[in-house]
Image 1 (tube, each protein chain N blue to C red):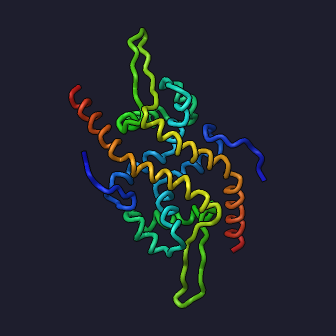
Image 2 (cartoon, rainbow over the protein chains, first blue to last red):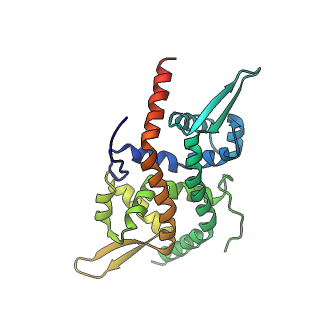
Image 3 (cartoon, one colour):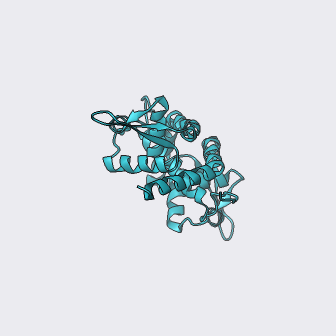
Length: 124
Length: 124
């Protein structure tokens, strides 16, 4: 076990990279959609519309490595592979859900701010 | 005003891009450090160790445009420019603080998961 005082403001602290991983839009959407229960690779790809195969593969692998997702293989024919949240992943789903909620609820306000900014900028 | 049902799972919905912006590590760290009060450009750069001048400039501009930060110029000699959270920014600071807290508290567990994953992978 490593003993350290984690500080994301320290450029060398691994929490900074973890923060980058968990705040990533693909992580937020994948963890969010797995909150409903385990899903197959292709099902996740359909729900998280617009993610490339490569990005989906990479993100899933990173999340499994981080202990946020579990990859389960069922020895059926053809073999079925599913991804599901671990306990740690379920714990993360809550703050990420709040973030998604925030974006959804405040989009209008942000859009208005952008319009004002662009109008002011074009009048300079 | 735009009337729409925001859905970050829709690839064409602007909430997806907003989610990407607010989950960005630089946004999280900048909004977090401005929670203590307004700061100058150079002070923010010092606190968010490792951010490049270019990235700091770009992120601050985007956050001002999004209505999350306000840029205040004080007509002193030399002129003083400070950035501070708007009401919207203060509202965002809370969920982002929870995210930072999560990364800080769970770093040990994620590090252990990675060690196990890498050990299992090397034994394959």
